[in-house]
Image (tube, rainbow over all chains, first blue to last red; front, top):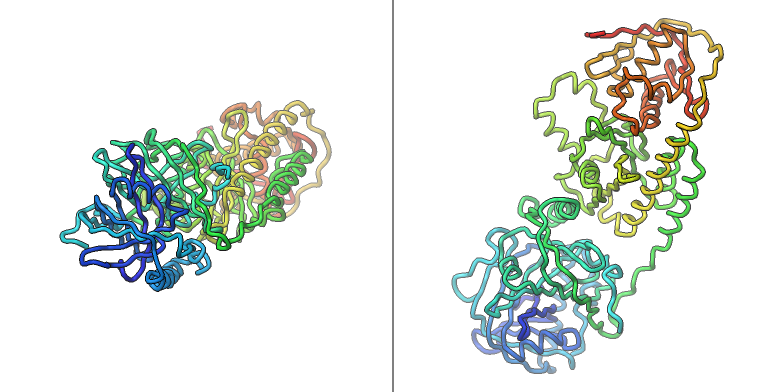
Length: 150
Length: 452
């Protein structure tokens, strides 16, 4: 699900425990083993990026719009770097996947393209090793811890 | 860049695209969750649906700060709300409004039976942030619907020209159709004594449904009446279908006589959008204005604004007409009506519930039934055909619920039911607060099981 390209939302918090949040513009498994990378557009995600840079805490929800199947990963440490030309194909395939996903729930690709619009030079790659994983599919089981790593 | 007001981004609160809420526990671990509903309460408050005892719930009880990410469904602009948890409501207008909207969202997203509103979590909005758009990628904003205010104005102008209830109801229903494109609408009035609403006028249905009843509290219309608050749904949900509610109530052991006197509810079998707005005046509930559509998300905040304004005008007009009618009533005029000829109509009256059957067909019950019985009794006993609202109001045998009861609405209901029944027995207005009983055939009046 993470590599295929579904909805990705990234959250963090500041020193006063005030939460910050933004939608990612891409995701991938890797680059290192057991690592996950999500991409955020800097002008739209300043607080989240500041918070992650300051304390490393982040929560990321991956969700398939058509089935509501969702998983949440959490970590207390992350590394940030500016995205480069190597990341461009990932962002493009993510966008293509999301256009399909969101069309399944009745929204035109134009909406998805506008929603995920970003300039490569503004994109920040956030990599982390998940420490906790939770089933987040809506319902009474939402929030239940998953057995192994996702 | 100035921050937008909550009112500027109400389209984000329609539930078309799920919002996201970020919270943080006391230990500093953030949490992100999809949320079915971010509900506009007022310019400084929103309410989030509380459906499960999940991590979001635990977090806001420990740390009231939360941040909501909203997406405008048309422009694809993001907005962030920094909010602070205040309280949870588990009943009342806000809760019921959210419950109805959630039922629609749940059904639309295949989550019927999973989504159930446990409470409305009310938050203070501390900051509204319009997230920077990437140049050249924002979708055009939809044109402002200035037409709505113009429509309200024109309906208001039509209303102030009306001098009788039937004219006012026609002005509203035709105005909604012509100026706001609303194809299906009805007006129900409150019977305060029985806490039921009865249809007095409708537009766009196969049958008028005049006289059909809904209990206060039942379905969308009943909830709007009980809570005295607009209730709006953008997707079809069986939770608020009257066919469903009626089946349930029939199962609940309703005597046969009740079924005989049921006038079918006229509404759409499969409405996808519904909006019910209470009609009130001087803090008193008078009825409900209801519109519906087979299309999804047909009624937005602007439509709700328009309908609340129109219902306000209508409520004031109804009250004013009643006051004028009281003042203007004069003694009934006398005149020789044409003699009735032909086979007599058999009119049976059941005093237990004031139901009236004409030639074995159910006509009406309750106050309107009692009025018809009185008119026929006076006609047969005294030869009268001219009557006044005032004498009805003073007639103790009618058991009018109270002085403020809308007698005009009862008479309109009776007049319309008679007109739908046939030409032989009618009532006609002859002036303000006066009317005539018009008979084309003689009447035989029978009281069944009478205690008189």
